[in-house]
Length: 81
Ligand SMILES: [Zn+2]
Image (cartoon, rainbow, N blue to C red; front, side, top):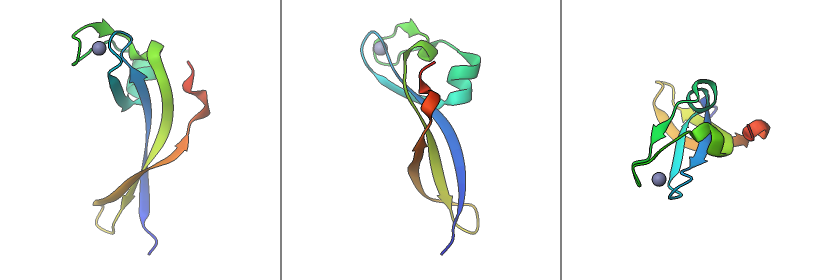
């Protein structure tokens, strides 16, 4: 069966104080460059400066648009900012 796919570009960051991992939409991390409050250690940091990876996530959908599976589509080369 040929399913439809939708994609999301995400950036992975690690808290520089405690190493807690974060994943968010790349437009939010890279374009906006917003600070985050770490849910683990409580310190504030900027994930744009600590992006460790950037990938394209593929959502496989059924005919009605319901997500059937999620997988890594590919790495995005310009993850280093
Ligand atoms: Zn932290």
